[in-house]
Image (cartoon, rainbow, N blue to C red; front, side, top):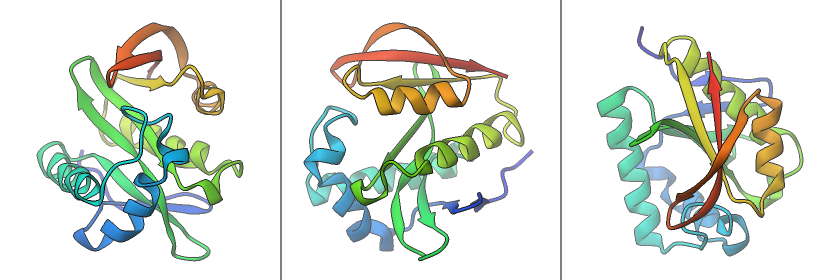
Length: 167
């Protein structure tokens, strides 16, 4: 069944990225503190941010899901990303929020919306997630959602904890 976007949570909406989101998302992706636990572990250039958003739009068109813009419903502010991506090991859940939005349960809410979409309309049987071993907050988000740690892996060129959630 096709996924009906945007996804609506109590405080957040998740919608596909547009080209107009570049400046807002580059403020997130260009922040070294935000990005120290994401991907290869460092801030990216504006051009890399643009490539990431273009890749998300392409992934959405190809698979019917992707990383989506996380919008704070109260303010209409784009505060980060959350979503699903096809990887060699399976479909992976991920999320990245701007620093001002940390510690409010918003990563859990955004990730919960993604899990519901994955196991509901998308009909996926299993999700993967990775967390930097130095980022216990991300591991706590995954645990709240029922993910179980499966071991250690190398992802994005560095060590990560690997988690799995089955429907």
